[in-house]
Length: 356
Image (tube, rainbow, N blue to C red):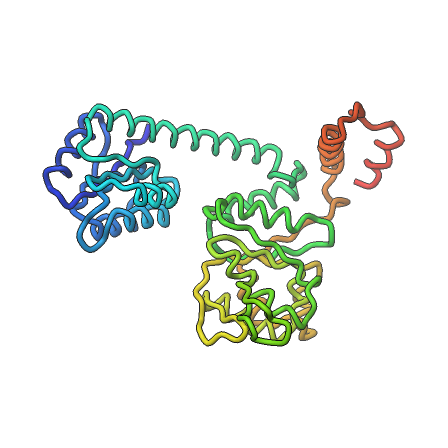
């Protein structure tokens, strides 16, 4: 079993060394940081199971260390320790993802128990994630299932792509499950707890496209009675799925390209650029090389979006997957409708198999 790695952050040497001695006695591999700056640098280069950080420190405080831990390693457990307890700081630390909030002076036995409980919860969460990964390897992702060789290749690409942060272009006929794949990529990534925003670009009138994507200020145009943030801002920290990307007008494609390249947007009527952290996934049922050749999709935008290409085979090319999907859907709707129907008639089975 791998050693449990702990980062202790405190600008008070005696407290830092006391915690280090205690943790090493338990058997943990301990790294000591003499302040927030040192801790943030350590978090950038190393992975830790647990961070124990003082709250009030010179220059870089414990909340900044907590933010850095969650940015570089979201699954790291963080305990915040302070002699200056207040409801406000406790609530803020918990909102930022701290496991618990410990007030000085504390009893070492109680701290050991808190640490053990935190690491046990982390172990159970990782065990649960591994179980889910195993189930997905065998059956697919939520709402997107199958066992055919072609769809297993799609599952493998989803797993490899999810944590890369790369933009993804999903192509395939209508009804092949492009949004389900986009959601699977999001759920498998480190952004899973952040927003997943989906939009069908073909359903947005051309005159409203820029406002929908990037937002606008109040009074920016006739009818703009209130400011809106736009879909990019709504998806900040998470994933934005743009279905039917070729329906976006060329004039807006230029601004979309800038958003992808610079990671910033500008609302209509605003003079300021707004930084956004969005993972972009696009989809289309068109042949994209032809869309580029026909001038429908900008070539530079196409190459920016097509970093990872995921082509989805139609159901007719997925063999027995059609029966797997049919049975799952039957079970789902029978439960929802409280129906006793649990199987298919011979005629229905034959029809389904013929389609597959």
